[in-house]
Length: 177
Image (cartoon, rainbow, N blue to C red; front, side):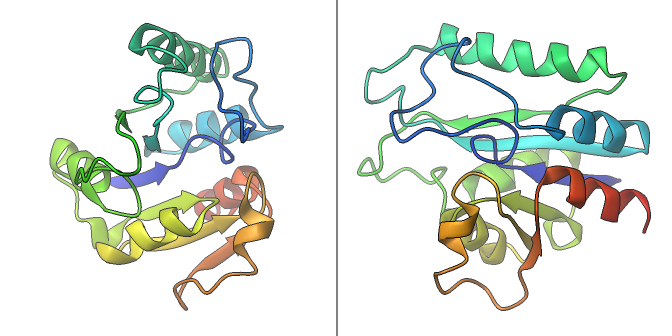
């Protein structure tokens, strides 16, 4: 199985320090939906692992999050692709859960669902926490320069991190490998 795991905000859609609180605020980044569809059509299983502390903070509810993810799935399907498992952490940063990145709980959940070896997976994110989660389970950390990616470039991150402009560039690399 060729499994690729993606962060959501800043990788697939625009991010906001004020949180993405509605389907209307959930706006895909240029080329991201097409990239997921292309990967899917090329035989990749694409899953998502996303921190969603806005739920714990009361900014939006699970129905709204589900609607955002339904929109994402519909857009990928319109391009002829399929999006796999979406796992989210609804907890706040101080709740001590095992799923909130930089902890690797969501990545482990996805791997268990697919029976996949995380050491053979790439995890694409835009934040230091994403890269740390990938590193914790020996996945290949991949940084995109979208979202918080340019800020993350100024931090100390795992030395084996691959860096791409955006998700479309990641897809082009994986499809033509």
